[in-house]
Length: 78
Image (cartoon, rainbow, N blue to C red; front, side, top):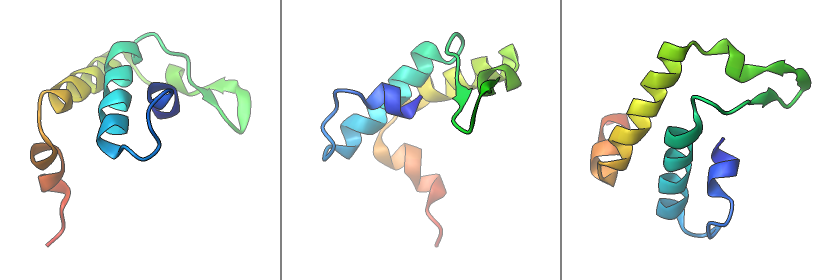
């Protein structure tokens, strides 16, 4: 999904790539069909429940309404 979301983005513009990927995930997580790259008969998107997809959509939307520090500060290891 990240690759699809970043299509058309500059490869040197990380913020644009992050926002594009999050927007794509938010807008498509509930309907996208994601296939296992090692086995195209295996649908990875079928492994997520509707509730899990909604949770991912909400998390992406929250991230899009945030800034870099809000998104990544909790991930920094001291």
